[in-house]
Image (cartoon, rainbow, N blue to C red; front, side):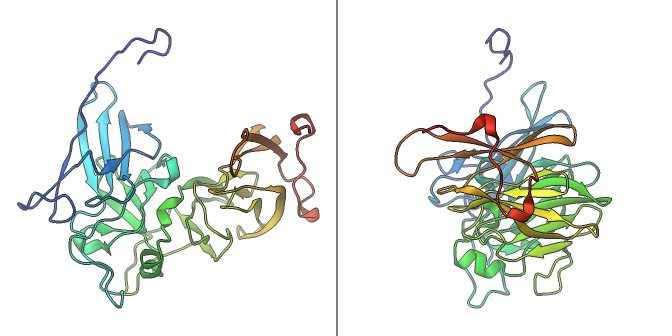
Length: 329
């Protein structure tokens, strides 16, 4: 649509897709078929390499469902590639007892609405998946951060060592989206899901180093940093990560001179009810940073937009709310 005139310029295009596999949505002949009645386009769109990237998860976990990432050309809205994150639904063999059965639904791509990261170099399309079967040999990637190339082929992946627990306890890694930033010469990805752990991944490394225990390469891990979990992603500014966990305070985690993350160094005076808040930062270059966060009321009433000064007095362990944006009454 032309934003200047409001007139349609392309489409509409009917979305459909197929992928090799015998898992959820299979037609029984080795092909998984995209089922619009079971798939929801929840995550944000991404525009890169002349393509529009569209991710799909489930509709309230009504089976059969799986995760889809589709690429449509920007100029013609024709499909150029399709990827399915759970084409066979085969349970993780390391889980005892095995989670689910062959053909199990899962590995939705939703990220609580966050769009995929578009990174330079190999594996430029990066996103996480929700609960589901895990087994790279069968192409199933539940609770995993995936790196796909422009044609939606898997280049690399990271799966937490406790994937069985995540699947069993409905602790989706994929409730969180990825954030890309640079610290001390390292190009990093930050991800945190329902279990609250923060994982930092180095884009210059190979993540998937399977040894039978799902132990992948990792730059750093902070266990339980976001109590009650994350629905969204972090904001980054001046060597700090800002996360707004479910029912908790907006938190500032800081990197030291060695490039290691710790914290929280500061927290907001306000808590944010389910599902938490997804912060963003505005600034004049590296100066005058403001962290913005929306507070959604528990029952009724207006939403409240908060503005906090970035990095102000972290030793006091509380953010200062920007004086020009304080709520009255």
